[in-house]
Length: 88
Image (cartoon, rainbow, N blue to C red; front, side):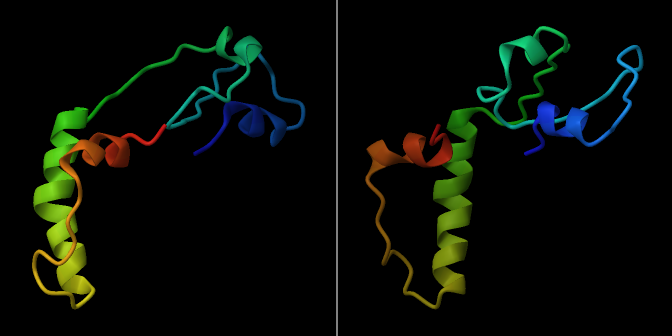
């Protein structure tokens, strides 16, 4: 994650009239004063439900196989998947 404040701090003498781009997975820690000067563009790629399907049906089985564990040896409570894909 790149915080915009960090990006601004790395360019001494930055002309505020020139545009600057940054990216963040979560803007909760970006100061309100900084957010007020930005145009935030959200680009969601997958819904949380899609992430659960991907994690449950593809990622967990592959990770289990890669670890050399028998299929089905790791069981995740269905109620936990949403916490796993969106921990914040």
